[in-house]
Length: 392
Ligand code: F3S
Image 1 (cartoon, rainbow, N blue to C red):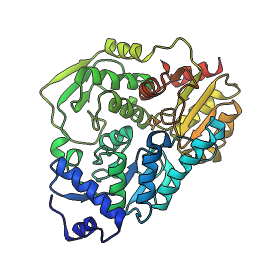
Image 2 (cartoon, rainbow, N blue to C red):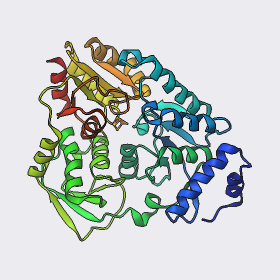
Image 3 (spheres, rainbow, N blue to C red):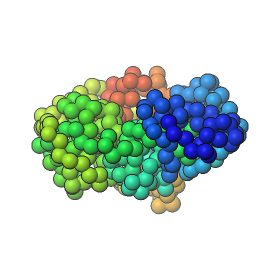
């Protein structure tokens, strides 16, 4: 890979050990994927923040990087294993909280904005169309590439940190236009309107088109607002492993019409919904996967007004959106019902295994992680029904 003089100096450790280590990571990655050069990135989003996933070895790596590493571009974090302030409310142990706060301290020392969210684009870390960025979390990567029209690979935790400390990423994969073209047309004849329709569509596309970048046709533009594309990005990234999709008349990237096509019918959507439902009863309800927007919080507050929840009910959200909601009186209304606003964290990265058995959620991605990480059975239903489940 061709390096500039400055990049060679960074690699040699002239700008410190953390920058040197970062350049080692980025050049090794670039060589592995055939990149010719490094390019500048405008922002970074780092995943692998929960102590639950990092454990002691991960924490040690971060503390080492924080000794002399400082971020060169705006950088935010993915959800952590707990609400960083009100962790007790979520039943988190003191020991876990102590370790998680050490992780956050290490990031803060590097100059990272320690906002922990998978929807950085809702809280000011929103790229412009055409910007190159280095983001980690799969739904955020998919949203940034597909809905915003930015350019990012799905970074691992270490490569995202390396990009944050250098402002660089190797140019390969999703950074190159030739790799962003649709390979299959997905003709949708089903009615795709509700959140669960969109979640099921992500699963159905994974079943029908595999990992090929789709150009999805047959979608009514008015049914594709950002909240729905947010939940769809999470689902298609999870079930099809995709970092990019195109929707005719909706998303901004240009692509030619592929010669191959598949159809997603109403029956396919029903089959996917059936697959996503396997619980008979629930003892936890969780929404906000990806983290809730203000519009979603407004809707939840409306639905909960005058009601009391009878089960654990988590509403996962970034601290910034929660603060804004607080100013508007929404947090008070939601918490009056007994539901819990889970800031900085989510139902997948918090240590929930063994505490609950049945999850109701409106997110197909939360179903996947609820089953895989926490052994939950799941009920996949729209927000209205999630609230009904919580209060029944
Ligand atoms: Fe975000 Fe956690 Fe879902 S990171 S996308 S809320 S699994």
